[in-house]
Image (cartoon, rainbow, N blue to C red):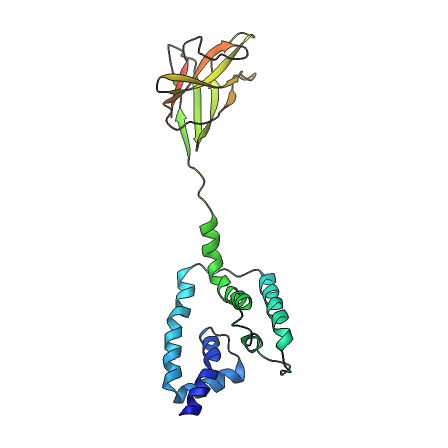
Length: 236
C-alpha cells in the first residue's frame, strides 16, 4: 500500500499534464494503465478536469504569438540548466520543465504559456475602453436669421460646429462660438466662412453642464462678451 501511495505522488505531475492534454505517447499509456487500477488517481483526475474544461468555455480562444512560447521555454530551460541531468533525446517538454515547475518565476511562465491561448481574447477585450458616443444636433436659427444651416457634432467633452450656411459678414468681422451655462455666455472660438460659405469650428470643453452652443457676429479678434444677438443655437 505504501508503494502505491508513493507511485501516486510521483504521478501527480503526469495527471496534471494528462488533464491538459499535454502528456505524450508512452507516458500517457503508462498513466492510463495506472488509472485502471487506482481509484485515488482517478478521483484526482476528476477533481482536475472541471477546472481545465472551464478555461476554453470562459473566454474567446486566440492563438498566442509564436514567439511567446519560444521566449517562455527559453526561460524555463535556462533556469533548469544548473540542475539538469542526462535525459533521453526526445524527452517530452512537460518532463523537461517538471523539475523546475515549483520555482515561482518558472511556474508562472509555464502557467501563462498554458492559458494564454484562451485568456488573450479576454485580456484584449478587457483592456479596450469604449469610445465616447458621437451626438449630432441640428442648430436652430435665432432672431430671424433665416439663412442659417449648421450641425453640432459632439464627442465626449468637446464638439465641432459644422456650418453649411450663414449670413455674410464684413471683412473686419468674425463669427464667435459661445457655450451658454447658467445664463452666462462663455467664449470658445472664432471662425470665418470659406469661399463656399461653409466652416468647421472647434468647440473646446468643458461642455458638461452647458445648455447650448451659440454663434454671434463679433469684431475681428473676438469679444469677451457678445456684442450682437446670437444667430443660431445648438442644444447640448
